[in-house]
Figure 1 (cartoon, rainbow, N blue to C red):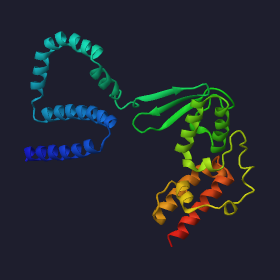
Figure 2: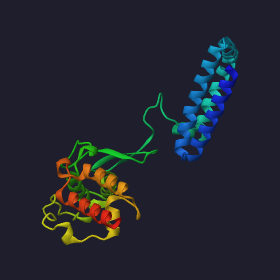
Figure 3: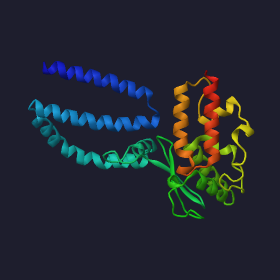
Figure 4: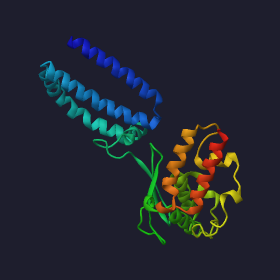
Length: 255
């Protein structure tokens, strides 16, 4: 019975691992290899303990220890001089699930990090009006002001702020941002969205949806963006109005 349980568990684990491996990106596969290696070692220790054969592993380890001491210098040398091994090792996660490797970009205005797995941006403002602030804590209005500062600074800073805005609220901010002349909603609030007009394609783009989205998808996207763009949460009346108009157009279209 015990053997049957073990075989069933192994087959199930192999099936799940195969599925995870096929759907993983190259970077994620490095993470999986590390986790599976640790999991296999722990499983082996548990199995040997339950079956009363842990002493076998201890004997093998003791016997291999002298050889390991001789081989270790050669392994270290290989990692230093073989690029493939070094790059593979650098791609492994830190101990006990520490943060994955990040790419850093430092500009005159920002110090930005991009997670190599999720591609999520984070960072700190290092100069200007918002110096010392975490970019994640800035409201949409403040980010647009920061974008003005970036245009006066350098192109790398502009790219970073634009990418972070896209990550935070999608492309909606581009529709009313005016370089060097942003002052919240003052320039646009007097124009209602109905006066501006909005095509169906623009409505889909604003909510980050594809044509044919269901009512549930429209409502979910609208709610998610409103949580970020509402004036009470650091957004503007104009952004909130554009989101409401986009939702209205798409909901009427689906009827």
